[in-house]
Image (cartoon, rainbow, N blue to C red; front, side, top):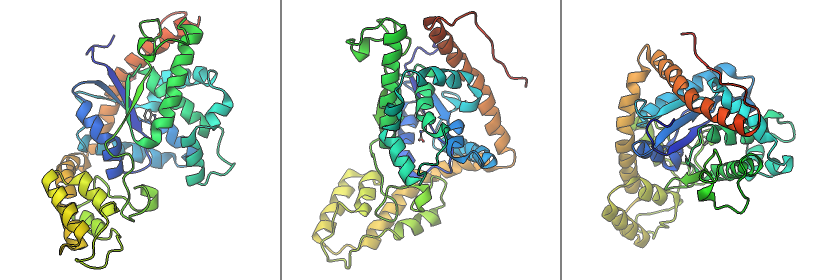
Length: 358
Ligand code: TRP
């Protein structure tokens, strides 16, 4: 079933635009690192993009291809990991229906990540029926692959918690697992789903270049993985600290110093900068910013180089080819899960086969 016998990871992104440094430290860095120890599935949540942008179908397709380029640039290896285009995996949509019956309506609406999104995106009370349904769908994304680990940014933890609830409820309802059972024993006790765990990146919340809000494309305070060296320099130099002079003792809890700690690799150098800055020992913000920009450039330069390969003419076709091939691999796993679930739900009547007409 699981050819590699490695535990599975499922995680992904909603295609809304280019990926930035907040995505990198929140999750992408973990994904790239964990590829050798896990059987990884990286989801392009294009169905979720439709929940708020159903009228922007062409943009969503573009954003989907762009995100794959960002992933490949960031070191996601298509020979080791499987890219999953959500709309090509029918098992996800089918399981979403059944999972929707295992969650009280009010439980979904209390999900804090959904609530924040409604506020931030100013959805008021006019969001679609499908909008909150995406949170149920996200449970199906993860469970379709029977994933054990879900590397995500901090904002996604509430969704993973809901997914854990669904996995338990399914096991109690259809697999005879006791509600007293330890999460770790569910599969032993007959559950088809492991109870998945979230893995949050080393930085939960990376501040944006406005020095205030969480880095986010819509706030215009993001450094993108595909930014040029010049753009990086410019954006870092605009980071506002409010400090007046090289001799003013600086606050090393400010956003500039979050960047220092996150992006400068040499620990001794970080301590030295913190020490001098906090004492106001003849060290200007401009100097610190230049070192930060240099460190970010060292991180992003190899990504930029890898990305250039896919930005050449024909690059989009290469990306689409990967997506298509991987969809077959992904469906092999998700269809198996769906069949196992159907057996438990007294719905199985025989296996079916999906294929693409290439
Ligand atoms: N909601 C996630 C985001 O916007 C994307 C996502 C969809 C996801 N399905 C997932 C992440 C399953 C982890 C697991 O970033």
